Length: 309
Image (cartoon, rainbow, N blue to C red; front, top):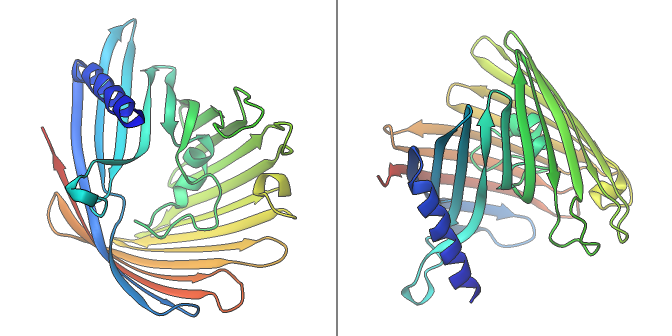
């Protein structure tokens, strides 16, 4: 019954978008090989799915200088074809909204404001990013506003948590801004979780500085969450440094929980084959700062994008 409801919901949404003034339907196949060398388990080599997806987007001018917008992004997994069947694997994003001179308002499954203003600026690796950072994932039940005035861009979002025992309409509030000065970008954001009667509310703050030095792109991000936000016995902070040079990139994350200091490093390169196809290669070092728990990971992934119509 749930599958039938999901399929009918998708079909109804797609039908509405298909009547828009502008629609776009694309897909991206991302599959590759992974080798993991760990201190705790035997080395492993496997072929894996790396976020393959189908995207349907549309927009339609509805008058009064307003444009209706919609975006659907569903993941599919080439490995999940048990019994010869395959289909939608997960909902990555599914939102609709309006845009005009005032900015945009979107509601649905999407990235929230903290990601837009802070975390997203260091999320540069194809796969090995955001390992110690907060608010790097897409969230459900998000109402978000994005606006811009000259060099200043700003964002605010409200989130509802479907697992909230208190069943509050709003469980999290985020607000942040970016300011661009020449080749430099500065960003600040905060995220506040409400007290739902079971868990105490928590607070996260973060900042980002990003810019170019000749052909080298650099970004430095810092985040700090109190113990209630981080669900730990103490506060948690993390530092992220990223760099890019042409099609080569590097990401370094280091966290501090008061008890241990996990750290992660990714070095990657993108090899462009043509307009639709590329391969990326990543080496990643993972250290959770626990006993005998270090990993060296190698990835080689093929990515092919195509328009369905």
